[in-house]
Image (spheres, rainbow, N blue to C red):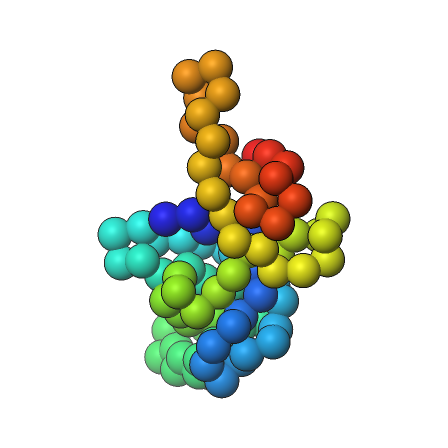
Length: 101
């Protein structure tokens, strides 16, 4: 999976299309990511002894194919490729050719 935690991504499909956000969590086995401010879901929390009942809004996971890495230098969504330098695999931007991390 080419998208990692703390990447800035642009949602390219679904109800939140066009939104940008930071990846809070990535789940490679499920091929999903949780993006800040995207796919907001309502969760009902039951009352406990020291807490009242509440309705919380939390981000839900979305499929990684519905997001695209957003390059802040190019100010555009870009595809990611890989390049091996000195035995280390690095992610590169296909548009600019620069190393991402």
